[in-house]
Image (cartoon, rainbow, N blue to C red; front, side):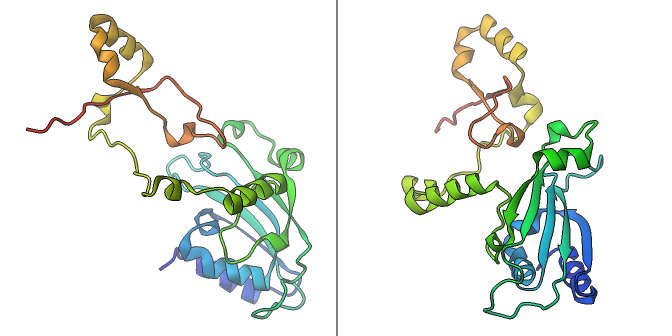
Length: 220
């Protein structure tokens, strides 16, 4: 089970001449998804990436939320073999995430030259691909190897979160919250701040004064 573009990647690289380059724009899900593991391994053993531009949650396409990324892949002179060292393992890959807030009126080539960074191709294998700068990736590796994962610390799997069942009724803005509390101060006990996915930044949340009415269930 995999998205159909996975097979276009493999076919494209197979028919490419040595030192030829192919470039696609597709969803970035294969970089980390379980179904992308065979494709990541195929690339790691048989190709060299020259560039990865990740647009993440940026609205590239108005009518679709597809998490697009573009890649430039080069076919080396000699393909790798199972268990062999990656071809040109020390080659640098230019990586550049493009945040949605920087997308409007952007000069993309200039932005990539200024904000992009080099990552050694040897970083990438069949495991999930990280697009973090080397310093951040080293820190994350240190945290994973020496720290305690949240699921182990809590001794349970984190829950998905609260579902309102009707956003238009239970999600309110700051003005509505203030109005309700002015009418009845006890409302403050039922109104809690909430975060959308886009408000959760790399190291801290970005609160937008959004609120949720949370009603605790009462047993009969």
